[in-house]
Length: 250
Image (cartoon, rainbow, N blue to C red; front, side):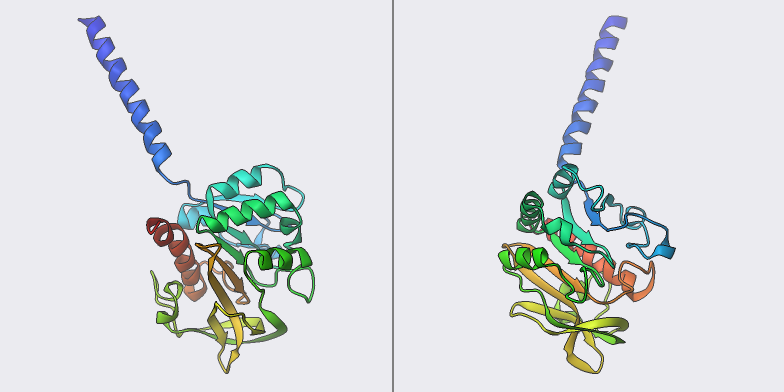
């Protein structure tokens, strides 16, 4: 009797283990790759994001800097839906490596988002030559005629794009910016612009990149910096679109 009971228990345990393994395979891994030149540092040195995405959105953050770039980034990109490039970050090393470029192309093909945060780039050009070459190779012309300067921005109306309407309605709200672009390419949507001049774009989205992907260009400093308010609501909407709505529609 004891032997039979032991066999039954062993069978139940084996079944549970198998079910757990199957469930793990079926559950999507919510990873996000974060690239900064200085790595994860305390807020006083201005490296972003300033709040943990893992705590606020249950995402696994894979952090890299030029000094820590290695073969693991391609695997992490493969199971991620977003590559976030931090504020004040020279993004050039990401796009100088052909293998990394292929991994980023794959991310876009799977419906991922490439996000350039506030003031990325090596200098006043805003983007490195390697970055421009990569973007053009995937059908994205970087916004042109960039100008520095503080100002107040207004988000476009909620019906312009889902990132302005769900899960939080932020369309029409005001926020601050530093710098803007005066030229966007065909197919790019202006999600925020200077309050007094619609031709000064401060948040730009291009969807349909390599079929399903998207690229965003941002000049609103508070995004990925503030853990409350309108800026945080925008982060909520972006991540919801990329990791929930975007995934469930595929």
